[in-house]
Image (cartoon, rainbow, N blue to C red; front, side, top):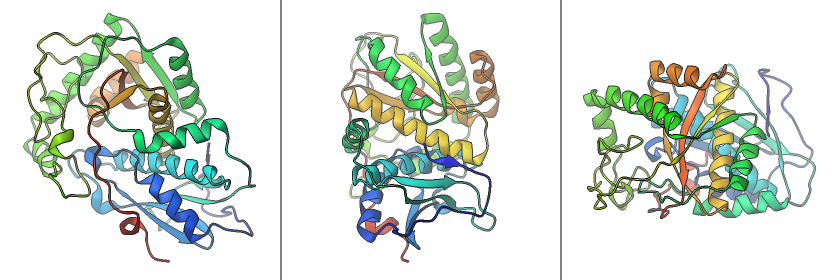
Length: 333
């Protein structure tokens, strides 16, 4: 877990800093992180031997993400991938996440810690980075084994977050009702729907959601709400979908640094799921609507805020969404 500090000085230093090839490897993994509507709101820079991860305010969704919460979650996920790539090179990062006065876009600054061989878990999760994707299609009835559920819980805890696995029809129904209520609030906003439309990008775009990755169209009978990206088609399978495994990931508090840390926990969860041969999709509508988010927190009996709802199970992985090139997201030194 990368350390979190509110201080603006005393950044870690190292006599042997990262090199351009380290930056390229870290960014190649980082850009595979998930982001809302695949906006990819991140930039990277090599500065004084440190790798800086910075947000790209121009890619924040003004309607769906007015506070920048989704940008911070996405940048935290990218940070998690970058850390894995550096560990895979035997140069694990020591870093600090914190807001810096005058540099609101600085997410984290990473410098090399003591060199060591990568662990077995790090290598497994790093191998899962290019395979991870959001699955918008149907999930099967095959249950998630208890051993994998335990791995998911451990993954989130190791990054300082909390994870509730929602078990049983009454509990899943309660979370689903909150999610659908939030989705209805959002859908009533014409600008929100237009924003989704604008980020549905046919090839050869390098961002957004391509029509082939849109999945089935939203349907009132869906257990959890779907977004209607252009290209979504009605589900040909008329049978009711089995009850999914639903997880709610949260953080101890809701500061900017805690949201970035939650992004790291989310990415570690998603990579653990991928490594186990499962699929996942993220449901952020109940987080985007403040009243629904608070209702979800109270329903779970948690003091810290929920940061994402995740649907988990066995399914076809779905189409890969495009990514910007490594060169296009690196800020020249």
